[in-house]
Image 1 (cartoon, rainbow, N blue to C red):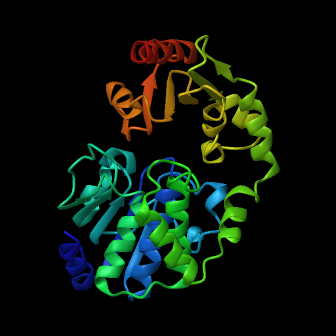
Image 2 (image 1 turned 60 degrees about the vertical axis):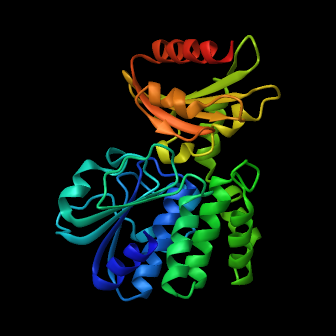
Length: 316
């Protein structure tokens, strides 16, 4: 499959690179790793995400070139959809504007929507798959691409704390550092360059912390009103789920984000015992064993109680 992807890169000129809505570190950094590499090859590339670049990832090279609208962009020879799981998460309309669509992902049960399907569930991050492609092509890893690849792996392994921090993840990270990536600069960009309003939003969200009576799951909630009061948006909430996850004894963390009064995005994180990927799929979403999400219709309390009931059935 890598050979086929390498061939279509060499044989075509106009590319679209997209990732899932509400992009996390792997989605953003993978998009920019591939985008920067293709541009270095002399290709015409549009990087796209339907949502704004989260503030934590604006330090990545090329982040300012990501567009949220494809109107007037015309047709593309090839479209890469990264880290999405399902085409609808990146945009079902992408299929109409790309001659060839390539799905590159590491999520289990990733939808086979592309002309080419490169999915490896064992990969630590989609960024690792981009690295494999570039190495197979013999494309020299520039400092810009190295920074993006390193960030993708760092973000999706939870700074190498999660179970997906495998030998390949450390090997790639070590190579990127040898190429000049500064771990301190990346850590500073991700964790120590926050806008004040993001911390104001976090404070409001932490006030909603609830821990179940059994102590095995905990949640926080972000409402539209909180975001309006702090002049923020959904892109400022990346990583908030790690706070309930850090509570001692908690096995599953949940993050509820209001999209509209009757529609909520629910994020799940598991410490390993509970398959939250299966839980998310029951709710119409998807993801990994330890990290997943779904959109759930209903008022916030209805959604919360419904999700908690499902969790109770898994835990007891």
